Length: 315
Image (tube, rainbow, N blue to C red; front, top):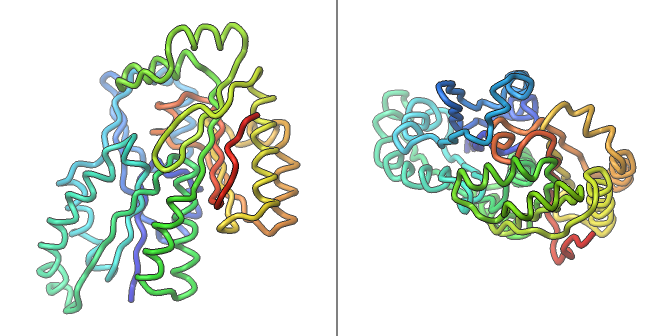
């Protein structure tokens, strides 16, 4: 059986990895004023955006997932012919409409695929499954990497589905933002009051940085620490301990809102990489998607891994 994989563009994995493993991207559209960009995870374009004047107005951006009609067309034009079963992994439905739109599109796709496959000389049925990773950015990539591993190992659809759905329940995402004012402005734009003006002002004045945690779709502050670099260093050390304790998959996903060289120069990074190498955990590093960057601001660090019974980061 030909198994296809689809992720949305807010799933942070290296573009070369996505291309090498035939993982298709469900784009998200970003509009800032009169400028419209479709996020195809083009790292050069994302960095160009970051360094342009447009990035200064990123908090005003409108991010829009592919519509039901656009998603239906994407599948019917190609995917229903190239594959027999497709897994579509989306960032958490609590923060994006990608899951809902794809789920709705699946009905039209499953009703309309037969004619397309028949025209291509394919008489066997087509099926698809939309899976909510219940996480964001780098953490959403953990399930996609596992899906590739299982597909390459020749596992069947049933086992892959059960594994990915279980993995979503145990995937942990952590983020340290640089700019609380930006995060607050973006939250207000989206109607999210989780970062108040007082908290943003106080945090910026005292250089207090929150460590935000996403788990089972719910996002909340896990800790507040003084200084961006010390906060990242403690998060990296916490992640190293989780690696030593044992992960559900040999995968650690990192993304950064800027040049990766900046992330690699942060304190604790080298030690984390050494621990991963010692425990045969593969590290995936990517520049944060354009969608992610306009939502959380430049310079944010995100860590994602899957672990059972993992304690919550406390700093």
